[in-house]
Length: 120
Length: 112
Image 1 (spheres, rainbow over the protein chains, first blue to last red):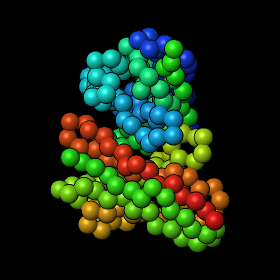
Image 2: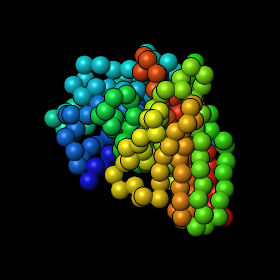
Image 3: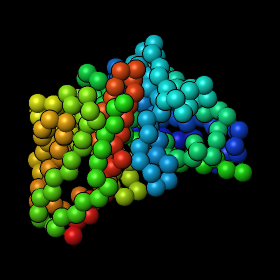
């Protein structure tokens, strides 16, 4: 059974940093690209970042470019998101999501999410 | 600019059928989309990917009650024999060149 479990969220002050992690199991992690998607309270879904299976390609939404860094450790089946210079508008539940592996960029498994709150 | 448009809300009775619509913006009518379901206080769940010819690829364990279709720039999700657990938000999603991933605004489905 595919499982994605996020951790590392919490409360942080504006301008601060936080690192999210996603533990993957139930599939060959090193064969799949991965993503982070977020959802502000009461709002819709917003894609944040993508990383290819070998980490050779990474992409970011304009809203986080230059502040967030996505990475992965295939030996540990782990995905990470380093978030710096956090703003109030970054407050959201952050989900890791697996790329479905076909043509295009679609997500076929999601984690349960972890709340990040940016507030003083 | 690639935009996905969804009605904010929909409702149908228990045991009935409902058809949700996701409309692709002008110039993007050939794009495939995916449907995701988000039950209250849960993470999203992938339902299916729908191609512009109407063929679709369902996610693991998705019941036969869920089906997809396509017409022009519209992509549909039909849920038959509605159950209480189908009450959820439904999002369509696609992508454009430059890895520009787009979500629709979501449709909140109420089962009466």
